Length: 321
Image (cartoon, rainbow, N blue to C red; front, side, top):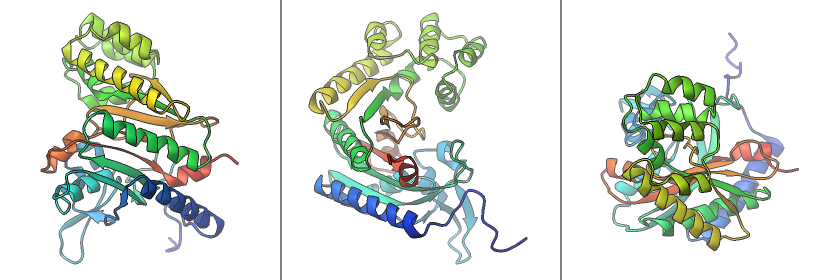
């Protein structure tokens, strides 16, 4: 086998493609700096426990682990940078009460992305830590909309959900939350009906999950059903409805806010509000974000945290001409 044979899912970047990435990266750097966010540059490798803490198995199956020849033990190449931010904030930046951070750098997946076939991404994003509730959420969602506009995407839309709603619907199930999230993400009523046949959930929960699978769990449906499931569902519904109304009023004309209870995160370390970003003429989500308060607690610092991230390579490949 040739030693120069390309590795499946990994590519070189040079010439105009490398230049395009740097130009967009620097424009976003200025956007985030002007908004009061400071850059952080975590290392490419971490100890596996640092990457998986707070995220559990949700990151471990995408993490490349190897033995360090310099005797540092097992090390891992990061598949996602948010756990690194959580580790940094909980340790070396623990004296700061509120932190607004941004980052941009390569990550590597153990397995190719289902849609693109790539194992490499240039993850870019922002994290707002120490601000609970709507204050931090609105700021982060605003920056998400501004980021898409800076890259040339038009008519930004943020689809917003809440992990508390899904958790409340499947709380009585013996199946892991990850299995349910993967099922909901397929948007297949047939698959959902088959799965529910082997469960013993309440009729109201079954009916709600079928609505999610059909892509019909919008704001009107949520408002009508918020008190028909259980107390946890009602609380999460109230939080989401109020947040969507607040963000819509504050960012009117800049981004459209659409409630979709079936929105699922890229990784399951999110614990509250979650959102995905879309724009005109794009068929796939451009970014993912949400709250991950529980990850911070796992890292030893109990503080609110919210943010979003995206793959800069994917943005270049899908940017309007």
